[in-house]
Length: 261
Image (cartoon, rainbow, N blue to C red; front, side, top):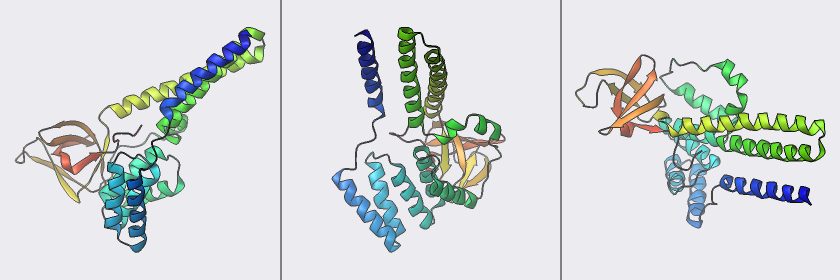
């Protein structure tokens, strides 16, 4: 009896934890019509109209990797490199590891005139591969699954004293802690000022927020920067260690948007 009660309690806890991870609501009827119109426009070669239809759906609060991928492709076909990279980057947050998306994003990035000096730490990417291979939602799911496995194994070990169950509890607990810490880091990273993309063909980055401030350098569509402050209709961005300045807020858009993990 005690074992059955324990198991029921653990299952109820697991079900409650899964509820926040439910996928976004399905497309509304109006969104479905916009999606069909957007796909039809794309197939006809009217990429501007396709992008307009897809953005209307995204603007209604729909968060979908496939939708964002289509948006990136429509903008790329329309010659809008900045927005193409922006939406591809957003799609990559929701569909990490998608081969077609990675190919298109790499191709679009290669078309950008400005390449940041910042270098990816490949050693870190290899050691912490799960953070780069899994979406934030998947990381949280793994934390929950391993956490639940830990408590189940621990309860079973306390009732049976079998060594293999103790080892399973230790292993699943360690994995759960690892993924929980990764989820916490992802949350902190996304909650702070984050990565953004330059939208116009060319922007002027100045030393201050006024239009007569000294011009420091220029950036072009698709350049990836980090926004660290916003004031008076301007954004302070960091492109590299020695290229920091202010530009118009309207010309740079952060990758993370409301509804994304």
